[in-house]
Structures are given as structure tokens and as C-alpha cells.
Image 1 (cartoon, each protein chain N blue to C red):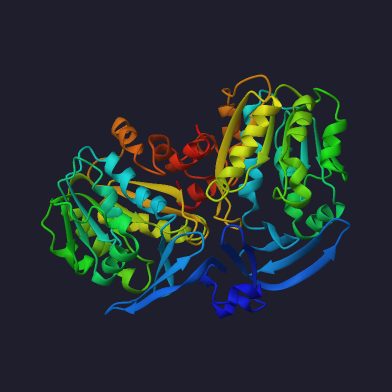
Image 2 (spheres, chains in turn red, brown):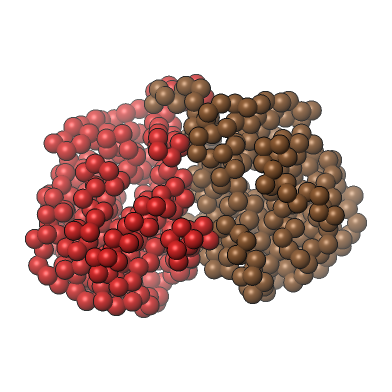
Length: 286
Length: 286
């Protein structure tokens, strides 16, 4: 136990769940304070680079593909033809990069409040930023909540909310007013997808999020589960909500074509990720 | 970081993967040394009791259902009519308890080398031991490798290998000779299932295990994935191998009937667990 207190490990201690996850590090590379938050980059021994914001593990080189692929492809392949996409948060450009793999996409607005996150990603996670110069990519550094308030009605096909935890700066991305603005900004059949924490540790939060999305007027919901080793419990989720149309269509052939270029996602994983274990169905009253 | 070095956290540090997982503890309840290993029980703040063997996390009250259900039900519901089952290891009785939920089962031999594990489980994990008095349960405290050497040919329908890691005492459960003995002990159509570590961290081991099973003469293999928050990476796997018959039949209706009594497993989860992500299919050359 004593070794973990040495400077050779980065630990994220999750007090409200009584769990902690650590990665062994070679050294801290940089620490910068932006107007909004403290961003640190570590070099780990086994997971490549690690970005930490205000003490919370954000992403590593080795395993970010799990989260970025699952936040993107289930939503985009469930939409008939996603043309205009917005990513709220996501300053590391990992989701942007995945969205741009879809040929139907004509524009992606990435709206992160903190330009320093993107600057750090360009430096330490260049593979996530390799499509930043794509003419379809629109990087905006402004408040995502306000961006959705001001968005033109029925102007987007998919809204991806890559938020931090629902405390602190991310809090306003988990409520009725925000979902209402997202609903207005979506075209009919449009899809909102948001990270919804751990299905093992945060069932009450998933239920609250789903209730709030439904109350805001979304017609159908679907949560997806996927592994994420560096987040608490190692299993994570995202929740999709659809405007004015139940889920059903899944462009399986298109998904299969793209999956050659992906590390986690394929059509069978898409369908598997939608299957919820008994404890979660019971907690969500499904 | 410094808090984790306090006596309030139990940490399993996995040096060969550069990861560590911690649970917050109220206190250590007991530590005993058997002829074979050191067994400790902690009371955690959020995961109930925790059993640790030789420093390695074995199971917690809160999340053991994931592992025990997935080590049992995919194999038993893939077999046409499992009557005689053997569990190698599994002294905590968690798998035994799941196997006995199957009405077709006439006998379950639980073969663990260390009676102290079962004694501790009866005390601190009584819910896992609630079927120990079932007349179908045969608890034997002897060496599992030798048990399989001496087993009557074609006498079992399902063999479940609930081994520790493939180093130390568990090593002899991961090789050709052992698999050969299992094959002989199975009836045609019989199934061997073994825990096969983390699909994210131990892909080489999964491949070696599958190669060894095939080389021993098993006709078809199927790995299943499931979450396990207190094991490295939070995602774990088991691998099924079938004697003289490819997989195919899955008793979905029976699985559905039992799933009301289970916390994780249901027929959709069974099918979902078989779907492998791209990185694993590539690592296993599937």
C-alpha cells in the first residue's frame, strides 16, 4: 500500500463511492491553470499520456478510444443521415475526430469553454487532433450552455454532450433547461447523447438524467454501456435521447464498413452495448 | 494521493500492468494463514466485506454477483442438460450457489485445496454459502489438478475453473495437461469454462489459453466479457470450450425464467457478452 503514496502513481480517489483508481507514472510533464481549471499532463508507464483536470482523470492515450467511439458511433449510426453535429465540451478533440469519420457529416461544432484543453491535446494527444484541419470542423471556445440557448431551432442532427461530472462546471449540462434547449436545436429525428457516468456506481444519476430528458420532451431513450478502465468502476455509460421519433433504425451496414477503422465499435458491439443487466433495468424501472 | 497510504484504503497494485484499484475500508477484520496462503477479510465503506488472498483482491459482497453469475450461467445454459458439474477452486462457494439454481443439476463437486477459504466465506459471505447444505453439493478440499487427473472419463457435463491468476498456485490450471484431463472427464457436448483475466490488459494470456484448449482437443471456443469493478481494468472475461460439438444451442427460454432471480445475467446479456470488440478480435486473430 505504501508505494502508492510515492510520486510514482497518479491516483483519482472517488470519495462518494469509496473507490480509487491509480496509474503508474514516469513523471508529471506539465501543469497549467486556465481561467477555468487546472490541467495536468502525466506520462504513465503503461497508458501513454494522461490528462487530469482539477484532479479528475480525463483521458489516457491507451484507452480513450473506448469512450470516444462509444460517445459517437451509436448515436450517429442510429440517425438516418447526420449532417450537422455539435459536441458540447470535448475540447480534447477525440469525439470530433470520430464524428469526422462519417461521410454524411457536413459540419461539426466543437464547443468547449477552455481553449487550453485543446492546446494541450494538440501537443500531447496529436492522434485525437489529426482531423482538426478538416474544413467541416468548427472549433469554438465558448460556454456550451449558452451556445445551446442561442442555437437556431432545428439546426442540428446530433448533439453530443461530453461533459465532466455533474458537479462543478458541468452541472448546468444535466438539467431540464439545457435539455429543452437541445430539443429545440435538434431537427425531428435528431439525437442527443450524453455521458451518463457508471452504471454500477451512479444509477440514481442515470435515472435522474433519463427522467429529465423525458420531461424535456424527448420521445425515446436508450442507454449504452462500455468499459472505461480509468474511470470509477471501470464501466461507463452514455444515454441517447431522440426527438419526435422512437429508436429503431440502426444503419448496420454503414457501421460495419466503418468498423474496420475502429478499435472498439462494431455492429455487434452496438447491439450488445444496448443490453442492460438486471440490476440496472430494476434501478431504472425498465 | 497521500490519503491512499493511510490505513483507510486497501489497494491492489498490479505491477505488470501499471494499474492499481483501491477500496476504502473501515478496518481489517481478520487475517489468517492457512497451509497454502494468507487470507484477509476487510470491512469496506461501500462494497461490504472484501476477501484478499496473498494480497490479491478476490471478492466483495457488493460486486461478486457479476463474476459468479457470468462464470456459471453462460456455460450451463449453453449445455443441453447439465447434470454433473465440477467447480475447480471456488472455495468461496459463490459459483456453487449459482450452479445449484439449475434444476437439471444432480451433483456439484466443489474442489478447493484450501478449506479455510470456505470457512471464511461461511462467516463473512453467508449469502454465497446458503446452498452449501443442498444434498447435491459435494465440498471437497483437495488439489483440483489431481482431482481432474483422477476423474472418471466422461463423468461431467460442465467443468468450471475458478482459478486464481496464472502465476503461483493457479499456474497448473492453465496448461495442456490440465485441459487434456478436463477433456477426458467431460461427456460429449460437455463444456469447460475458465476465468480468462482482463480482455483489456491480458490479451496474450487469453490467446494462449484458447490455443492450449484447442490443442488439447476442444472443438469450439467462446469468450464472454463482463464488468468486474474490483479487478484490474474493471472488465473481466471467461472462456468456454466445448467437447466434440460446436456451440450453437442456447437455452434462452430457461435462461429467461431464471434471470428473475439474478442480478446481472439475462438472455440478452448472455448474447451481448459474446460480442467481442475489434481490438480483442484482432489480438485473438478471430
